[in-house]
Image: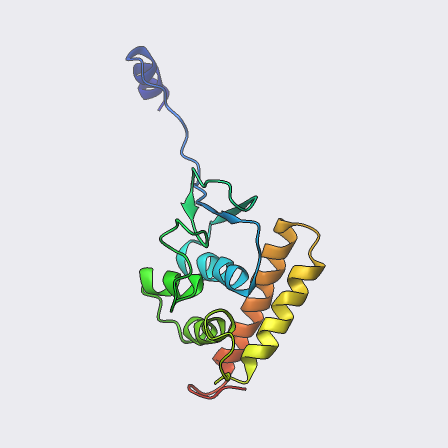
Length: 164
């Protein structure tokens, strides 16, 4: 090992010890249920090592994977929430993740329509409480992940196709 490091140094190459890569996901600091649920979905089903950065609204995202901003691929569309964009892009089929997607769709896209899941209103109220109570972005992302972990566990305990 020492010999190969010496040889690499002599050839002008620099040996850098392998370090775990941390993926950066970037959005604006405008929080809503879709953003909070998307953070959980990324962390639990796309990139467990994800690190999140939130920029002031309107600031261009120049690094990392942008999400939930107007120019991002993973964003809200007329008939799709950011959460659903992520589900679709990464082909996530986990039952709890998909059921949460239905709720987020109802909260963000079908805002004025009658809710088909009894839990949608409860989820929206709880997430908005988390947003209002959070002291900073890091605290909010941590609490949102805990909340959606609990929700996913609850969904996993009940028979498929049965909402609360």
